[in-house]
Length: 552
Image 1 (cartoon, rainbow, N blue to C red):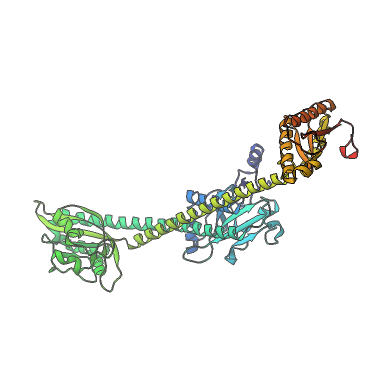
Image 2 (tube, rainbow, N blue to C red):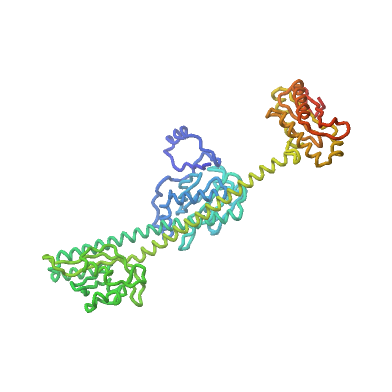
């Protein structure tokens, strides 16, 4: 079931031609022929500079079409039983659809949105019949201009940093009904998962920007390293330029001589370590002196693992090694280290240099993204289990209802159709035969001398006798369209479809012979030693009137 709103179109004349060719809308909530005024299909028109909240909205807006978001919307429709569901972003004067199930909303004016009516309340909205609610009755989605929504429920989507809601998770239906408290609770759980997913995408964008900035800083540092390596012999002539560059960049640059002792800390390195380079420190003591740790932030680095020492001693290029700098009195800082050994033109060693970029914020963002992703997976698994459990319960209820319906129409003793089933079947058959103009016959069967059977053999044996007679009658009826029913006590009825009086007589004789052939013993007086039956037949012919008007 799909709700479709046409958001844009060609100029008036061309639009008329397009409307003439346009196929009828798909089934779903009834649509009015008009489209939302002022809506647009693509990028919003130019507007004033965005506030921080609008910036978050812009980041969320990029999530449109995300498969994970689409999956959560489908689950929202499933757990509430609604025909349609969507995630909508309220961005300035526009409402933008980010994901939808069985509905196409596109971009529409906020002024005409159902989501914005009570979003300021900051809580879940549940409207069983929007047409009967004065707050919603005049909204185009309700009054028939665009659709005829009746059931409506929504949960506001609030960024993790707080503030006003930026959108809603909504479910719709064209039939009025109430959602249960568990269904609303699951809808709120899904709204948390949707918010986590949208925030994860926003944080991923921030991480990508931070990573790009770090790459740019590393590229700049690489230029510095290249300058140092290529022109190491005339450093004195360019020392002022290099000092200016080193003091400007926001990455830490550290160099050592061929013996591994420090020779250079730039401004950023001094700030991060809280001290300048100490030329007296042996390479084996660098980790302790400058509080250097593995990426876990707790394991002290051994000399062989310090990137500067590795580049010098192994004469290798170090790229992207992560360590933690945690000097006393300062926050721990995760840095990505790249560097290499320096050589003179004749190949002799000059030392080594490394560049360190601060990736603390990036790693924190990455952890948040991973945690949010895990939360989405956990919530999705929980919701899938709950949906499966509810579906199993619904299947069990349906099976129980089917069995109950069957039991209501079956005689408990003989397992044949009971009297209510017989009356209903006979009424329906009479109506059908009256339309077709074909005969309908009914046989009334009575077990002979049954009272004396009960008096002689007892009521339990009498019940067993009736069950055996019922089985014989059901087998002898032969035609699948005929109904054999227990009329009451020891009486049975057989409804013969499309059967005239002659045919009814044939069937009656067959039933009498079948019971006689069953050789059911009867020890009562006057029974002749065997159970027998008597059969009466009545036939309705076209034009004879309703059977209830008199006996045929």
